[in-house]
Length: 154
Image (cartoon, rainbow, N blue to C red; front, side):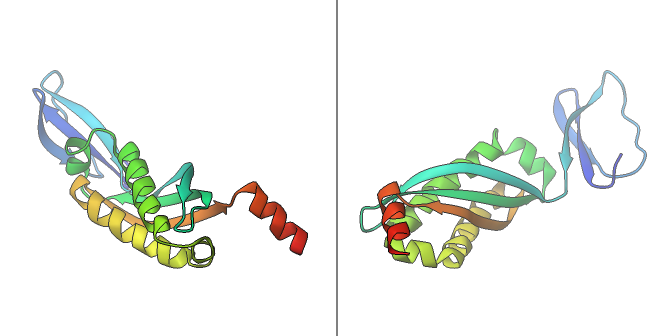
């Protein structure tokens, strides 16, 4: 087994143990490897999400989430689709955060939004055996009429 992976072993269909790096024996037909979990930090890039700011401007925000599995057993048995859950949770939380800000505040306070979003995601994913290390807003795309107006001014 590799150093950065953990195998979860089921005996007769029920969780039995986890195997960390090293040599192990699995009894054929009685035990099986239920899943293989990486322990390294992983990156997920979510597509742009449409949001509305406090001053009713529609924008799209593209986010990147860096996470790590801290408890492979809970990660396997507590949630069915963790990436979908993180995607939906980050989108709804980001909508709430952006809904409280004007367009100017949204464009200038990325660090504040990143830290608030990371805190909410980290608390929610803790029970799933995951830790959200970083959340980055990669791109904020304002409406095209605002983009054209800004380019005409400059």
